[in-house]
Image (cartoon, rainbow, N blue to C red):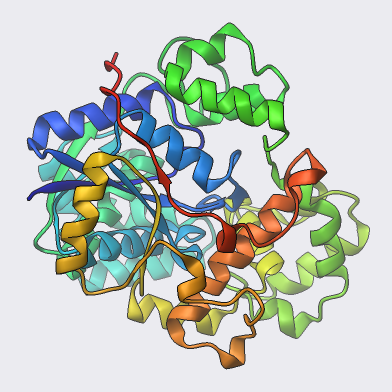
Length: 422
């Protein structure tokens, strides 16, 4: 039994994702496809526009066989840790033979050379040196690799190229059994703000949806019909869209009551950044004002947003460092179809980690205090807390009660034939 793995956010699922799914099957010849997907908060330090079960359902109704949750401690991280956590999870299943990912530069040999170069001490030392000068990890990485003569221009400043290189690095280190497969991104650029055709960026789709234009023809043409039906139902119920500003009162309260010592304990906080954030939080009336006051070449919006989400959950640097060493301690099932059911049976035989279909078998909603939990439970507790806080952003207050992770089972979806790719 062979399966191709994908690492995704589906925020939300759109036609470009559908094309990637069909390419993953066609290129690898694998009969099964597994997605490791961010939960309710995503890598850029934002709440997903729709909850994890909704996005997983979109994926399965559009052709994915099995969707697993990437634990929070890897999902809301920079590219290096995001990629490592997801690759290690796929590897631990014992059944995945390929990893298929998209990139702006769909040249596997070239990307592999870059990933190999990043294993060299002198290149890593160069990255550290450039980071100390200020600027982003992407810029430091790009400059360091340019110095090797392997790359010129802005190639490694593009988000999917960076992730592609990090996936390859993670495969070399943790999962050499995975065969990498790269497909080119189709048409839209990652940060495009407007929808101009059937292939649009998730950024443009989110922006349109958050502007209240959910029925605009531009959204309809950019999202598969099966996903669009789910999206419109969630709007009707008031279970989305969810944005970072929905958490402004809660986060401003958290920041204004925080001590400098506590804020310094959060991941990504260093070099006195906690003092800047505390000062900004006292003056700001919105999260956008906090970010605008602190943002700089060194402290990017994405980094600051991740810090805000870590503050919301109270995640600490020691916990992050510990889980970076252990790797994922479980595979949490979000949704599956008939093919996915077969996958789960085979994974149960081969995997090195527990498969979670019922949270209550592993964690009690009444006992999530850090000091009484084992390592797996701590990792899982962050996921469940993320959901409990995320639902506070639902427009309809009737859906804001906690405990969703303890009440919901994975979605089983009898699979119709997948839609035709564009």
